[in-house]
Length: 438
View (cartoon, rainbow, N blue to C red):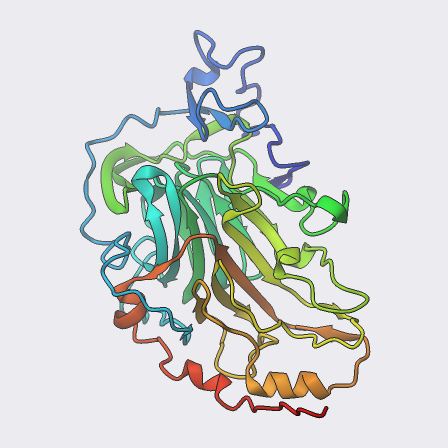
């Protein structure tokens, strides 16, 4: 039996039960008077009850213990010191920013996924359900008898180093570098790792991630819905003296003790699910004539805002592809933007920067802050022989783009000590090539 179910489209309805308990899913109704195997019925709602049918998201669990069976939540003191939602702790900084690879804790300092969450930048307010945050996770050990869930929004997780072996209430998901995983708001999960592990997280408060509309592209292209997979039901009936559930609530962490594992869902059905996607399956749409298409053609997932055509956040990738434009400067053009652009590098070397932007690092180009290729890239691309060529082979860069103006945290600007103060120098060698009588 496969460990995953393929999605025929976002909003797909799934029905799955652990094969150890056949017929655990009730027929004809969601809450029978008595569930099979003595299970409890519990609904997880990802949208308002009254959301339009095509947007309504919920899942029914049939579980051994209801989620409400826990001790009171208390402040979680052993984690969260680098998790922030205070966008005013630093003065605004409009400069181009580049971070060297973020440090992973040494093996002498055990740090799990939750303890290793560090906020780099963000905007908005989780209490008002509007905004986003960008985090990195830096860890080296597994979560023992601990589950985590985010009350504030969805997590889009981008592994860069190390494999994430994730157990969710829905089943298990294994996510490797060059794959992504989305854990929607409220879903409980635990992360096992083997050795040094690092990656990026895009958190959105407003809405859930969707596939972008394809418009004139037509029915096919970009990310195919059938390539997204969600786990099948798997449960453990395990009594644990001090199992803890950690909640991220209004930007702070809280923990509640209980005497059993929360991964005790025997069967479930619905359309509110965690899922993963292999970035190598992205179908690139690119120019075959002239000029340079906008980076929106590389959008994998989008979290739309209330303003049509404008996103709270887009997840964009720059994968290996063919470049065949005629009489065209092929790298990304010089640019000032009404959006904020946070970029990370999973592997390889980004095409528009010859040096300095490394896997495990990041850049932030804020609203209307100019950016573009460095001098070496400009000179090479301006004089290159124009012929079909592979671009970004062996590379995977990505971008979290937002319509909100993001502020950098104190950890991101100072504490991490990875901000490259010399980033601006990569453009200083660009020459004045102007000739009046060209």
